[in-house]
Each structure stands twice: as C-alpha cells, then as structure tokens.
Image (cartoon, rainbow, N blue to C red; front, side, top):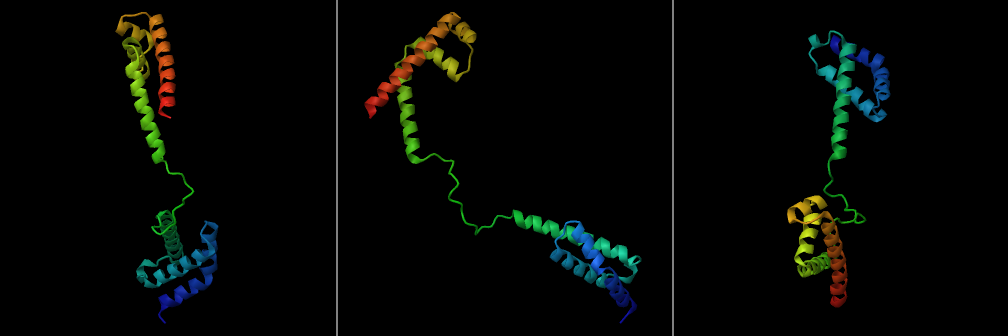
Amino acid sequence: MNSQVTDIASLYAAEHDRLRNVLVQRGVSAATAADVVHDAFLRMLRAPANDLRNPRSYLFKIASNIAVDEYRKQWRAERIIDANAEIDLSVADPAPQADAVLIASDEIAVLHQALAELPPRCRDVLLLHKFEGLSYAEIAARLGITKNTVMAQLAKAISTLRNRMREISASAE
C-alpha cells in the first residue's frame, strides 16, 4: 500500500464517526450521512496527492459539498410531478357544470330581454351606473338631468328589472 492510502485509512479510522456526527447535527439523515462520509473518502482516494495538504479539512469540505448536493437532489426529486400519480377526484373542478352554463345563458337572455323593455332613460341610467361605474353626479351631467332624477330612474330601473325577470323566469318554467 502506498503512503497516501495508508494516510487516508488512518484518517478514516480517526474521523469517520466524527464526520458522520457533524453531518447529522447539520440535519442530514443518519443513512445519508453514512453515504456522504463514504463518498467523501472515495473522492479523497481519487484526489491527486498534492491536493491533500490538509487532509482533514479537505475531507470535511468534500463531505459538506456532497451533503449539499444530496440535499439539492432530494429537494428537486420532491418537487417533480409524478406522471403516474393518482388524480384526486375529491378536488372540485373550477369549471362550471354544463347545466349551470345553460341556466346562466338563459338568465343572460332574460336579462337582455328585460333591459330592452326598459324605458330608454331608465336603461341609460342603469347602464351608466352599473356597467360604466359612473357616479350619480357624472350621470346627471352626461344626461343633463338632476342627481335626484338619476336616483329615481335607477330605482325604477332596478325595480322594473327585478319584476320583469321574475315574470320571464316564471313563464319559462
């Protein structure tokens, strides 16, 4: 045996347990720590002799680097989506059900019909307030009416729509 192998064997006997314990204290599992220590000593055996000026420091640095690499591998592996994983059918599908889509489209058609039947001024006030987000004062200025007229027209529009939607829905059933 050459002297480098003898030195590494002596270092192994002296530092194996200490290095494994240091890795475990840093959060590496005991099984992984044992593998890391083993790999670190194998790398030392492959290293050129002139790289081993301070074998103990070199060993601890190699082990630390290997432990970090192992942590990164484990972290990545945990985040890879398993293509064979079972689909959890208990999770609700965010897409609306087909019957809900039909009901909604029917309700939209009823709303359009009810809006078309509103008097023009009521419809304009309602659309400007609800769909364009204008304030009462802005609607009053745009239509050349008072704020009180805007409020009265809006109340009339909402009441008329509500009643008409009920009538249309009841006749559709």
